[in-house]
Length: 415
Image (tube, rainbow, N blue to C red):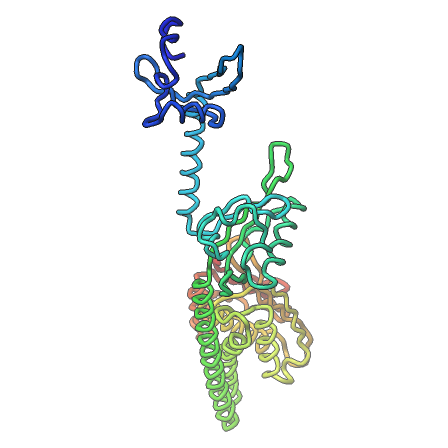
């Protein structure tokens, strides 16, 4: 082990074998029974750690010592590697900006990083190890809550992830954190502890509150804008109605009524928006039935025998699609009520808006008198037909007309 022959060894003392610097022979003798290992020097000058078991005894009046030595170089290398690994792990944990801790199933701390130690009122993670939360300087009530939460994770073996909550530091400061706690399990699946990680999100919560307050202010402002636009459009509708009452001719009055319905369709969009929790979209399931009923009410006696059938999916559209869609429906329902049914006859008008794989389909269908013979939408130059084509184009949609026993207008447009 030391590189000597037996004869050479017999001429040496323990001081010749020791690599400890500055020690006397007496000190070496005293340590041999108390120190688990010493550094020894080989004949070639190399040094190695030796584990020593040594006992003193008396034999025939002589004071003797028997020692057993073992070269523990590999073990010391493994110990040093483990120590370096622990140092590296500690450095990594202390470099993490989040607080990290781990406990045994009884909620006793096995370790933590410096961030957690500071929150717990201790500067050094070693001061946390071996303690429970009741032994740390948490504010009253905090320790009880932390222990109960960790015991729940350990007993149920179920993680709690990304829990946003308020906690108190040892200083008494309340902070917002996002916490994840997971049970630690061995290869057999047995829980031997709890790992916890939390991030201080107090600043983020403050920013979120500011953003939410700002959004609420903007929502109030936007609702007020839609409300005022709706009121102005209603005033315009009332003015049109007053002007229509001054006219004697039925054609002129009908034209004003059509104009009034168009204004109402736009007004109803803004009314739906300021009443809706979503200020960016109009709920068609409420909007189209209300629109059809208002148009029917405007025609009074003419429409009293006409049944409105409504079939609208739960669809929400933005203003850019809601207004042209509303105008399209207004034109089609108005045309059906005005032209499809002779006075005194009964009938039905279907208004439907359905979701399709690629977008939406608006249908207005009546079972009235049908289209005039030879009717060609592409050859028609009336304002109503031009308006229908323009509105369908604004939706990037296609206008289709079919007629047999019923007259059916379809506009399919992309989502």
